Length: 177
Image (cartoon, rainbow, N blue to C red):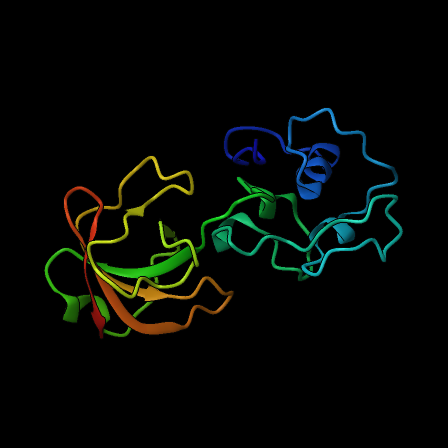
């Protein structure tokens, strides 16, 4: 299980350490103490601050709002819904229900992410092959409409592509903005 949403539950350092090892937030994995927040949040992983456990790199496939940014101030809120073992890339986007040109206009991304089923975690390059979801587990299809696709970086970068998601969550159109 991933870290809980900070809005729903209290996040603990010990359990977050378990999640960062990949064992799971609620697992019974026995961490080696001490645990330092700076090691948990270090994007490259490790234990250079002195934690007893060495941690893998932060999984940047998580949506940006669900992972630490590696910058001070350090905060547990950055681990809200963090999942060390997520395997689908989160993409940020600008959405329009009416047209690709509206979606492709310059603007601010929505701040939320969508996920799709491309096993290479790239922007889809073909229509009628992939599905878009609002959840990493692929349980909730994305809303029908046009999505201009951006990277999942701290400063999202436009990919120059848009997709059209049909009413079943299928990506039925992929083209340049």
